[in-house]
Picture (cartoon, rainbow, N blue to C red):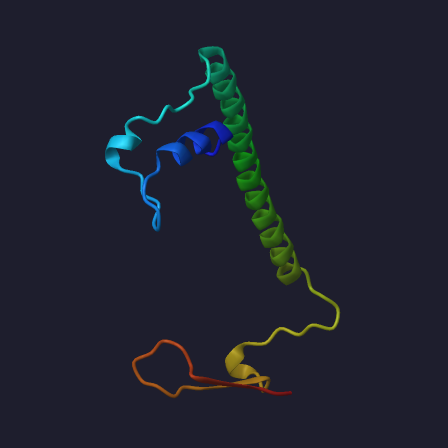
Length: 117
């Protein structure tokens, strides 16, 4: 419908002077160009190829995301499993590093945290 031929046809049958209008009767007289069957088959083949490539790319992207998550989790696990030089292990209740003040009753998280050494 964006072809030059179609636009020219449309221009010729549109009525109205101030406001161009395309009546339903005139709309039925428009000739819509349709590609030949071999051209349609060529277009479908191109689209099939593109959709197959998109599907493969989607699968690869999902696998890459899964691999990245596993790598991150593995690295994070390694950080906390291996004793890092200079790190201390303490329980929160035994530590002077953090004080948690519970403000609102009925919620399962503290409303205020104060961090200090």
